[in-house]
Image (cartoon, rainbow, N blue to C red; front, side):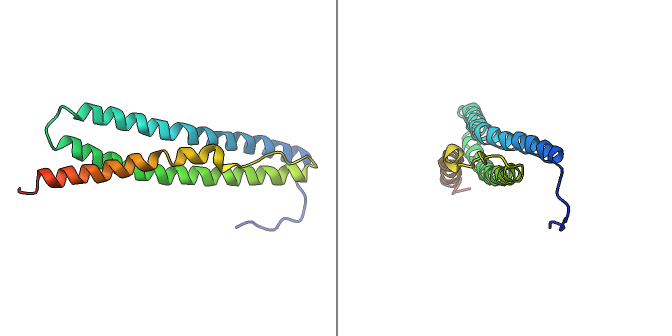
Length: 139
């Protein structure tokens, strides 16, 4: 909840906030590029290690990476929302400073990355569950 403030912030304060918000929006964008590739690499490495192991390790690994993928997806949605908030605040400060508002939040730049994790975690969870259920249905 924002408290009403009657006095305007100084130009110096606004410039510092502009710099901080610029860095924050870049951090969010960097995370949106790094997180899905890290998830894909970690999934591949884990499942690669489990291929030659006992029969129930691979489906359990697939279920675990599927669940982890759901968490990654939620995390990436929050990163995307944070990036949008930072850019909106950046535009507000640019306008208050009398600058041309050039900051732009385009979901299409990073939105595709959000959906690269979807098929991986869905397939892993479903296939892992199917294999596990099929292999151990008579136990």
